[in-house]
Length: 412
Image (cartoon, rainbow, N blue to C red):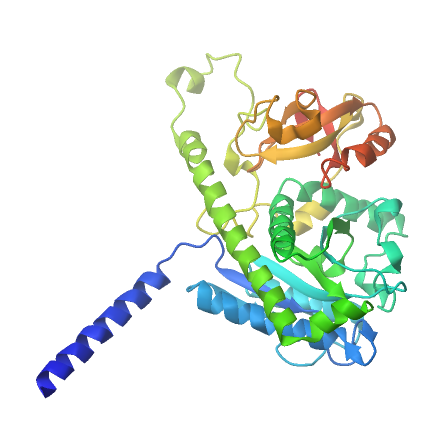
Protein backbone atom coordinates (compact mmCIF):
# COMPACT_ATOMS: atom_id res chain seq x y z
CA UNK A 1 0.00 0.00 0.00
CA UNK A 2 2.78 2.38 0.97
CA UNK A 3 4.71 1.57 -2.23
CA UNK A 4 1.63 2.30 -4.30
CA UNK A 5 1.19 5.65 -2.51
CA UNK A 6 4.82 6.60 -3.22
CA UNK A 7 4.35 5.72 -6.90
CA UNK A 8 1.25 7.89 -7.12
CA UNK A 9 3.04 10.79 -5.45
CA UNK A 10 6.01 10.40 -7.78
CA UNK A 11 3.70 10.36 -10.81
CA UNK A 12 1.93 13.48 -9.57
CA UNK A 13 5.26 15.26 -9.06
CA UNK A 14 6.40 14.38 -12.59
CA UNK A 15 3.10 15.68 -14.00
CA UNK A 16 3.38 18.95 -12.10
CA UNK A 17 6.97 19.48 -13.19
CA UNK A 18 6.05 18.72 -16.79
CA UNK A 19 3.19 21.23 -16.67
CA UNK A 20 5.46 23.86 -15.16
CA UNK A 21 8.07 23.27 -17.85
CA UNK A 22 5.40 23.51 -20.55
CA UNK A 23 4.08 26.74 -19.05
CA UNK A 24 7.54 28.26 -19.04
CA UNK A 25 7.82 27.54 -22.76
CA UNK A 26 4.61 29.39 -23.70
CA UNK A 27 5.45 32.02 -26.30
CA UNK A 28 4.79 35.62 -25.35
CA UNK A 29 5.18 38.78 -27.36
CA UNK A 30 6.70 40.51 -24.33
CA UNK A 31 9.33 39.36 -21.86
CA UNK A 32 9.52 42.25 -19.40
CA UNK A 33 6.50 44.33 -18.36
CA UNK A 34 7.16 47.47 -16.30
CA UNK A 35 4.26 48.65 -14.11
CA UNK A 36 4.38 52.19 -12.78
CA UNK A 37 2.08 53.14 -9.89
CA UNK A 38 1.70 56.89 -10.34
CA UNK A 39 2.82 59.32 -7.61
CA UNK A 40 3.81 58.18 -4.10
CA UNK A 41 5.33 59.44 -0.86
CA UNK A 42 5.05 63.21 -0.52
CA UNK A 43 3.40 63.42 -3.94
CA UNK A 44 -0.17 62.18 -3.36
CA UNK A 45 -1.44 62.99 -6.84
CA UNK A 46 -5.15 63.71 -7.14
CA UNK A 47 -6.97 63.64 -3.82
CA UNK A 48 -10.60 63.93 -2.94
CA UNK A 49 -12.57 63.40 0.27
CA UNK A 50 -9.57 61.90 2.06
CA UNK A 51 -8.64 59.43 -0.71
CA UNK A 52 -5.32 59.72 -2.55
CA UNK A 53 -4.41 58.77 -6.07
CA UNK A 54 -1.06 57.32 -4.94
CA UNK A 55 -2.86 54.72 -2.77
CA UNK A 56 -5.23 53.54 -5.49
CA UNK A 57 -2.60 53.32 -8.21
CA UNK A 58 -0.34 51.19 -6.02
CA UNK A 59 -3.13 48.75 -5.16
CA UNK A 60 -4.09 48.28 -8.80
CA UNK A 61 -0.43 48.01 -9.90
CA UNK A 62 0.31 45.21 -7.42
CA UNK A 63 -2.85 43.34 -8.43
CA UNK A 64 -1.98 43.69 -12.11
CA UNK A 65 1.56 42.44 -11.56
CA UNK A 66 0.31 39.38 -9.69
CA UNK A 67 -2.13 38.53 -12.50
CA UNK A 68 0.65 38.75 -15.11
CA UNK A 69 3.03 36.62 -13.05
CA UNK A 70 0.36 33.96 -12.54
CA UNK A 71 -1.25 34.07 -15.97
CA UNK A 72 1.79 34.64 -18.20
CA UNK A 73 4.58 32.33 -16.94
CA UNK A 74 8.00 33.42 -18.12
CA UNK A 75 7.11 37.11 -18.29
CA UNK A 76 9.04 39.22 -15.80
CA UNK A 77 7.19 41.98 -13.95
CA UNK A 78 9.13 45.05 -12.80
CA UNK A 79 7.56 47.69 -10.52
CA UNK A 80 8.75 51.28 -10.29
CA UNK A 81 7.51 51.19 -6.69
CA UNK A 82 5.90 48.58 -4.44
CA UNK A 83 5.46 50.82 -1.41
CA UNK A 84 4.24 54.34 -0.70
CA UNK A 85 7.34 56.30 -1.64
CA UNK A 86 8.58 58.94 -4.04
CA UNK A 87 11.61 58.06 -6.14
CA UNK A 88 13.27 61.48 -6.02
CA UNK A 89 13.05 64.87 -4.33
CA UNK A 90 11.42 66.71 -7.25
CA UNK A 91 8.63 65.75 -9.62
CA UNK A 92 10.81 65.94 -12.72
CA UNK A 93 13.56 63.81 -11.11
CA UNK A 94 10.93 61.34 -9.86
CA UNK A 95 9.52 60.84 -13.36
CA UNK A 96 13.02 60.36 -14.76
CA UNK A 97 13.78 57.80 -12.03
CA UNK A 98 10.71 55.78 -13.06
CA UNK A 99 11.85 55.81 -16.67
CA UNK A 100 15.37 54.82 -15.62
CA UNK A 101 14.02 51.77 -13.78
CA UNK A 102 12.10 50.73 -16.88
CA UNK A 103 15.03 51.27 -19.23
CA UNK A 104 17.51 49.47 -16.97
CA UNK A 105 15.15 46.48 -16.75
CA UNK A 106 15.07 46.23 -20.55
CA UNK A 107 11.29 46.58 -20.54
CA UNK A 108 9.26 45.57 -23.55
CA UNK A 109 6.22 47.40 -22.24
CA UNK A 110 5.58 50.30 -19.85
CA UNK A 111 2.20 50.92 -18.18
CA UNK A 112 1.80 53.92 -15.91
CA UNK A 113 -1.37 53.84 -13.81
CA UNK A 114 -3.07 57.06 -12.71
CA UNK A 115 -6.38 58.36 -11.39
CA UNK A 116 -8.17 61.41 -12.75
CA UNK A 117 -9.86 64.33 -10.99
CA UNK A 118 -11.80 67.30 -12.35
CA UNK A 119 -13.52 70.44 -11.13
CA UNK A 120 -16.79 69.06 -12.44
CA UNK A 121 -18.02 66.13 -10.33
CA UNK A 122 -19.90 64.88 -13.41
CA UNK A 123 -16.66 64.05 -15.24
CA UNK A 124 -16.24 60.28 -15.51
CA UNK A 125 -14.65 57.50 -17.50
CA UNK A 126 -11.34 55.95 -18.44
CA UNK A 127 -8.77 57.11 -20.96
CA UNK A 128 -5.31 56.10 -22.09
CA UNK A 129 -2.58 58.53 -23.07
CA UNK A 130 0.23 58.00 -25.56
CA UNK A 131 3.26 60.17 -26.19
CA UNK A 132 2.37 62.92 -28.65
CA UNK A 133 1.38 66.53 -29.13
CA UNK A 134 -2.31 67.28 -29.26
CA UNK A 135 -3.98 70.40 -30.63
CA UNK A 136 -5.19 72.82 -27.98
CA UNK A 137 -8.84 71.80 -28.44
CA UNK A 138 -7.91 68.14 -27.90
CA UNK A 139 -6.47 68.63 -24.43
CA UNK A 140 -8.25 67.52 -21.29
CA UNK A 141 -11.88 68.48 -20.80
CA UNK A 142 -13.19 69.63 -17.42
CA UNK A 143 -9.62 70.64 -16.43
CA UNK A 144 -8.80 67.01 -15.64
CA UNK A 145 -5.96 66.40 -13.19
CA UNK A 146 -6.36 70.01 -12.02
CA UNK A 147 -4.80 69.25 -8.66
CA UNK A 148 -1.64 67.73 -10.10
CA UNK A 149 1.69 69.46 -10.48
CA UNK A 150 1.95 69.93 -14.24
CA UNK A 151 5.67 69.25 -14.17
CA UNK A 152 4.59 65.88 -15.56
CA UNK A 153 4.18 67.59 -18.95
CA UNK A 154 7.06 68.58 -21.20
CA UNK A 155 7.64 72.33 -21.50
CA UNK A 156 7.22 73.39 -25.14
CA UNK A 157 7.69 77.12 -24.50
CA UNK A 158 11.35 76.97 -25.50
CA UNK A 159 11.58 76.92 -29.30
CA UNK A 160 14.67 74.69 -29.45
CA UNK A 161 13.25 72.17 -26.96
CA UNK A 162 9.95 72.11 -28.85
CA UNK A 163 11.76 71.40 -32.14
CA UNK A 164 13.69 68.48 -30.63
CA UNK A 165 10.55 66.98 -29.08
CA UNK A 166 8.57 67.33 -32.31
CA UNK A 167 11.37 65.65 -34.26
CA UNK A 168 11.27 62.80 -31.76
CA UNK A 169 7.48 62.48 -32.04
CA UNK A 170 7.74 62.38 -35.84
CA UNK A 171 10.32 59.58 -35.59
CA UNK A 172 8.16 57.78 -33.03
CA UNK A 173 5.58 57.04 -35.72
CA UNK A 174 8.22 54.90 -37.46
CA UNK A 175 9.51 53.05 -34.38
CA UNK A 176 7.51 51.91 -31.34
CA UNK A 177 4.81 54.58 -31.57
CA UNK A 178 2.63 52.11 -33.45
CA UNK A 179 3.04 49.63 -30.60
CA UNK A 180 2.13 52.18 -27.95
CA UNK A 181 -1.04 52.93 -29.88
CA UNK A 182 -1.79 49.21 -30.19
CA UNK A 183 -1.40 48.79 -26.43
CA UNK A 184 -3.65 51.80 -25.81
CA UNK A 185 -6.34 50.27 -28.02
CA UNK A 186 -6.09 46.96 -26.17
CA UNK A 187 -6.56 48.76 -22.84
CA UNK A 188 -9.52 50.87 -23.95
CA UNK A 189 -11.22 47.88 -25.60
CA UNK A 190 -10.97 45.88 -22.39
CA UNK A 191 -12.34 48.77 -20.36
CA UNK A 192 -15.32 48.79 -22.70
CA UNK A 193 -15.85 45.05 -22.17
CA UNK A 194 -16.25 45.85 -18.48
CA UNK A 195 -18.81 48.53 -19.41
CA UNK A 196 -16.61 51.46 -18.36
CA UNK A 197 -17.25 54.82 -20.01
CA UNK A 198 -14.42 55.37 -22.51
CA UNK A 199 -12.92 58.82 -23.00
CA UNK A 200 -10.71 57.43 -25.74
CA UNK A 201 -7.00 57.55 -26.55
CA UNK A 202 -5.27 60.91 -26.37
CA UNK A 203 -1.78 62.18 -27.20
CA UNK A 204 -0.03 64.05 -24.40
CA UNK A 205 3.49 65.43 -23.93
CA UNK A 206 4.26 63.31 -20.88
CA UNK A 207 7.77 63.32 -19.47
CA UNK A 208 7.67 59.73 -18.25
CA UNK A 209 6.70 58.37 -21.69
CA UNK A 210 9.25 60.59 -23.42
CA UNK A 211 12.01 59.20 -21.19
CA UNK A 212 11.10 55.50 -21.49
CA UNK A 213 12.74 53.65 -24.36
CA UNK A 214 9.95 51.17 -25.12
CA UNK A 215 6.27 51.10 -26.09
CA UNK A 216 4.36 52.72 -23.25
CA UNK A 217 1.12 54.33 -22.14
CA UNK A 218 -0.33 56.18 -19.18
CA UNK A 219 -3.83 55.02 -18.33
CA UNK A 220 -6.34 56.95 -16.21
CA UNK A 221 -8.52 54.38 -14.42
CA UNK A 222 -11.34 56.69 -13.35
CA UNK A 223 -12.30 60.00 -11.70
CA UNK A 224 -11.77 60.38 -7.99
CA UNK A 225 -13.88 63.55 -8.09
CA UNK A 226 -16.94 61.59 -9.25
CA UNK A 227 -18.70 60.05 -6.23
CA UNK A 228 -19.81 56.91 -8.08
CA UNK A 229 -16.43 56.26 -9.66
CA UNK A 230 -14.61 57.06 -6.41
CA UNK A 231 -16.62 54.38 -4.60
CA UNK A 232 -15.76 51.93 -7.39
CA UNK A 233 -12.05 52.83 -7.33
CA UNK A 234 -11.86 52.41 -3.55
CA UNK A 235 -13.64 49.04 -3.54
CA UNK A 236 -11.83 45.71 -3.71
CA UNK A 237 -14.23 44.66 -6.48
CA UNK A 238 -13.43 47.76 -8.56
CA UNK A 239 -9.68 47.43 -8.13
CA UNK A 240 -9.81 43.74 -9.08
CA UNK A 241 -11.85 44.49 -12.20
CA UNK A 242 -9.52 47.28 -13.30
CA UNK A 243 -6.47 45.05 -12.77
CA UNK A 244 -8.14 42.27 -14.79
CA UNK A 245 -8.95 44.70 -17.61
CA UNK A 246 -5.32 45.76 -17.77
CA UNK A 247 -4.12 42.16 -17.55
CA UNK A 248 -6.34 41.15 -20.48
CA UNK A 249 -4.97 44.13 -22.39
CA UNK A 250 -1.38 42.99 -21.79
CA UNK A 251 -2.34 39.51 -22.95
CA UNK A 252 -4.05 40.89 -26.07
CA UNK A 253 -1.07 43.09 -26.82
CA UNK A 254 1.29 40.13 -26.40
CA UNK A 255 -0.76 38.14 -28.91
CA UNK A 256 -0.78 41.13 -31.28
CA UNK A 257 3.02 41.36 -31.16
CA UNK A 258 3.37 37.65 -31.87
CA UNK A 259 0.98 37.91 -34.80
CA UNK A 260 2.82 40.92 -36.19
CA UNK A 261 6.15 39.17 -35.75
CA UNK A 262 4.80 36.15 -37.62
CA UNK A 263 3.61 38.34 -40.49
CA UNK A 264 7.07 39.85 -40.73
CA UNK A 265 8.95 36.56 -40.99
CA UNK A 266 8.26 35.90 -44.72
CA UNK A 267 9.37 39.45 -45.58
CA UNK A 268 12.41 39.17 -43.34
CA UNK A 269 13.43 35.88 -44.96
CA UNK A 270 12.94 37.36 -48.42
CA UNK A 271 15.12 40.33 -47.51
CA UNK A 272 17.91 37.99 -46.42
CA UNK A 273 18.00 36.08 -49.72
CA UNK A 274 21.05 36.86 -51.90
CA UNK A 275 20.48 39.30 -54.76
CA UNK A 276 20.42 37.97 -58.33
CA UNK A 277 23.78 38.13 -60.11
CA UNK A 278 22.59 40.74 -62.61
CA UNK A 279 21.72 43.15 -59.75
CA UNK A 280 25.07 42.57 -58.05
CA UNK A 281 26.81 43.35 -61.34
CA UNK A 282 24.83 46.56 -61.69
CA UNK A 283 22.93 45.52 -64.87
CA UNK A 284 19.54 46.27 -63.34
CA UNK A 285 19.53 50.02 -63.93
CA UNK A 286 15.90 50.39 -62.86
CA UNK A 287 16.54 49.11 -59.34
CA UNK A 288 15.83 51.62 -56.58
CA UNK A 289 18.40 52.37 -53.88
CA UNK A 290 17.94 50.67 -50.50
CA UNK A 291 15.17 52.15 -48.41
CA UNK A 292 13.39 53.81 -51.38
CA UNK A 293 9.70 52.92 -51.54
CA UNK A 294 7.68 50.00 -50.27
CA UNK A 295 10.37 47.48 -51.20
CA UNK A 296 12.57 48.57 -48.29
CA UNK A 297 13.58 45.81 -45.92
CA UNK A 298 11.37 45.48 -42.85
CA UNK A 299 14.51 45.43 -40.75
CA UNK A 300 15.41 48.97 -41.80
CA UNK A 301 13.54 50.39 -38.83
CA UNK A 302 10.87 49.51 -36.32
CA UNK A 303 10.79 48.01 -32.84
CA UNK A 304 12.85 44.85 -32.45
CA UNK A 305 13.70 42.57 -29.60
CA UNK A 306 17.21 41.22 -29.21
CA UNK A 307 16.02 38.11 -31.03
CA UNK A 308 14.87 40.15 -34.01
CA UNK A 309 11.17 40.05 -33.17
CA UNK A 310 8.77 42.87 -32.42
CA UNK A 311 9.12 44.52 -29.06
CA UNK A 312 10.71 47.43 -27.28
CA UNK A 313 14.18 47.65 -28.76
CA UNK A 314 14.77 49.94 -31.72
CA UNK A 315 17.78 49.99 -34.07
CA UNK A 316 17.86 53.76 -33.85
CA UNK A 317 18.54 55.22 -30.43
CA UNK A 318 16.26 57.81 -28.90
CA UNK A 319 19.20 60.24 -28.79
CA UNK A 320 19.61 59.92 -32.54
CA UNK A 321 15.89 60.43 -33.03
CA UNK A 322 15.95 63.62 -30.99
CA UNK A 323 18.87 65.11 -32.88
CA UNK A 324 17.77 64.15 -36.40
CA UNK A 325 18.11 67.06 -38.79
CA UNK A 326 15.35 68.29 -41.09
CA UNK A 327 15.42 67.35 -44.81
CA UNK A 328 17.13 69.75 -47.24
CA UNK A 329 15.12 72.67 -48.59
CA UNK A 330 14.94 71.05 -52.03
CA UNK A 331 13.12 68.07 -50.54
CA UNK A 332 10.77 70.26 -48.53
CA UNK A 333 9.54 71.89 -51.73
CA UNK A 334 8.32 68.52 -52.99
CA UNK A 335 6.37 67.40 -49.98
CA UNK A 336 2.68 67.51 -49.16
CA UNK A 337 0.62 66.57 -46.11
CA UNK A 338 -2.11 64.01 -45.54
CA UNK A 339 -4.14 62.59 -42.67
CA UNK A 340 -3.13 59.04 -41.75
CA UNK A 341 -6.01 56.79 -40.65
CA UNK A 342 -4.40 53.34 -40.67
CA UNK A 343 -1.08 51.50 -40.81
CA UNK A 344 -0.63 47.84 -41.72
CA UNK A 345 2.07 45.20 -42.19
CA UNK A 346 0.14 43.97 -45.24
CA UNK A 347 -1.63 45.76 -48.08
CA UNK A 348 -5.27 46.60 -47.44
CA UNK A 349 -7.64 47.04 -50.43
CA UNK A 350 -8.65 50.68 -50.75
CA UNK A 351 -12.28 49.56 -50.93
CA UNK A 352 -12.04 47.63 -47.64
CA UNK A 353 -14.84 48.19 -45.13
CA UNK A 354 -12.09 48.89 -42.56
CA UNK A 355 -11.96 52.42 -43.95
CA UNK A 356 -15.61 52.98 -42.99
CA UNK A 357 -16.98 56.19 -44.53
CA UNK A 358 -13.62 56.83 -46.22
CA UNK A 359 -13.86 53.60 -48.18
CA UNK A 360 -12.48 54.21 -51.67
CA UNK A 361 -11.27 57.68 -50.64
CA UNK A 362 -7.95 56.70 -49.07
CA UNK A 363 -4.53 56.57 -50.68
CA UNK A 364 -1.78 54.06 -49.94
CA UNK A 365 1.68 55.30 -49.02
CA UNK A 366 4.90 53.39 -48.37
CA UNK A 367 7.25 53.83 -45.43
CA UNK A 368 10.05 52.02 -43.66
CA UNK A 369 9.45 50.05 -40.50
CA UNK A 370 7.19 47.20 -39.51
CA UNK A 371 3.95 48.91 -40.58
CA UNK A 372 5.15 49.76 -44.06
CA UNK A 373 1.74 50.41 -45.62
CA UNK A 374 0.12 53.67 -44.52
CA UNK A 375 -3.37 54.76 -45.55
CA UNK A 376 -4.18 58.45 -45.69
CA UNK A 377 -6.95 60.86 -46.57
CA UNK A 378 -6.49 64.11 -48.46
CA UNK A 379 -3.50 65.91 -49.96
CA UNK A 380 -2.55 69.37 -48.69
CA UNK A 381 0.28 71.75 -49.48
CA UNK A 382 0.70 72.94 -45.89
CA UNK A 383 0.35 71.34 -42.47
CA UNK A 384 -2.22 73.89 -41.27
CA UNK A 385 -4.75 72.81 -43.90
CA UNK A 386 -4.15 69.15 -43.00
CA UNK A 387 -4.61 69.93 -39.29
CA UNK A 388 -7.99 71.48 -40.07
CA UNK A 389 -9.05 68.32 -41.89
CA UNK A 390 -7.82 66.00 -39.14
CA UNK A 391 -10.55 67.27 -36.79
CA UNK A 392 -13.19 65.96 -39.17
CA UNK A 393 -11.39 62.66 -39.80
CA UNK A 394 -11.05 61.98 -36.05
CA UNK A 395 -14.84 61.71 -35.82
CA UNK A 396 -14.43 58.40 -37.67
CA UNK A 397 -10.79 57.55 -36.81
CA UNK A 398 -9.98 59.01 -33.35
CA UNK A 399 -6.27 58.14 -33.72
CA UNK A 400 -5.80 59.98 -37.04
CA UNK A 401 -2.84 62.34 -37.33
CA UNK A 402 -1.03 64.45 -39.94
CA UNK A 403 1.93 63.00 -41.85
CA UNK A 404 4.38 64.46 -44.31
CA UNK A 405 4.51 62.79 -47.74
CA UNK A 406 6.56 62.95 -50.92
CA UNK A 407 4.98 61.28 -53.94
CA UNK A 408 3.82 57.89 -52.61
CA UNK A 409 6.06 57.76 -49.53
CA UNK A 410 5.79 58.93 -45.93
CA UNK A 411 8.82 61.05 -45.12
CA UNK A 412 10.21 62.36 -41.85
